[in-house]
Image (cartoon, rainbow, N blue to C red; front, side, top):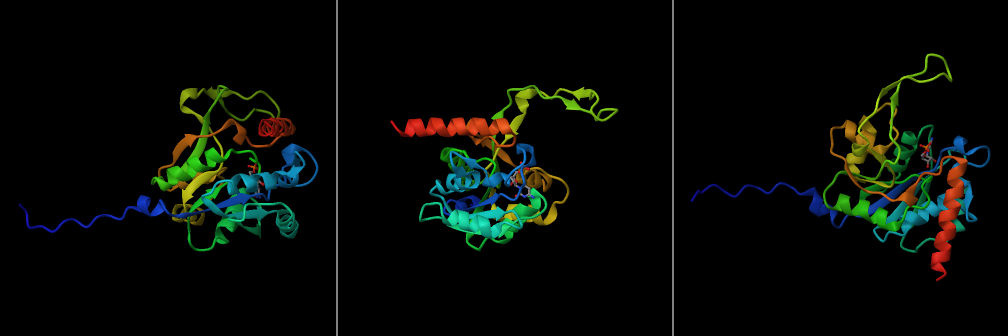
Length: 258
Ligand code: C5P
């Protein structure tokens, strides 16, 4: 038998995360130009309630989430704050409102900067995905608690995807250069979930145009894992998405009525 001392166990961040507190950052500072003229997208109503309020409630519905940081349009933080004050949220949930920035990335960073200590798991959720079910939110948190530094909810694609090159002339036909294997592609939703230190490191070091937070973490060389998303977590981007969102809400109300 060896007299060597037992090796020091390496720290297991996953076990620390089983009890970690979770905060959600909601970037809501976009104008939503693709939706047509009108109020900033997050303030448009669905079923009579602003999209942002639906999104905040979707995060607060998870019992694990005790703080929601809303990143408001830079000139609209006071308006967003009073809007949220007039809509009921669970008592266990604190809400902070901070002004956002020029890009989504900048807005998320400003939200992260406002996070108090003591929250070691962070969700980032688009205000533009107001109807994500709580089971999806909980599945993302669970995967972070189980040890993943970064988690994205995803869906398989129904459309085949083509990679194209820019057209020779604006508006002209675009040459197709590749057809990636659809079975290996996924459409990515939010909330994306992170070990807080990993996400903060990504936002402090990664620059350039990225469309989601997990993409920044990937650039650090850190593993990102995917869990099943939900069709009701779709992003409200174009006018037809509003029609679909109203239909989903109407169906929920009907189901709740019975
Ligand atoms: O533009 P896109 O649909 O990707 O926006 C996703 C989310 O990022 C939306 O909830 C939008 O309000 C938010 N956003 C932001 N700050 C910006 C641009 C977008 O918070 N400057």
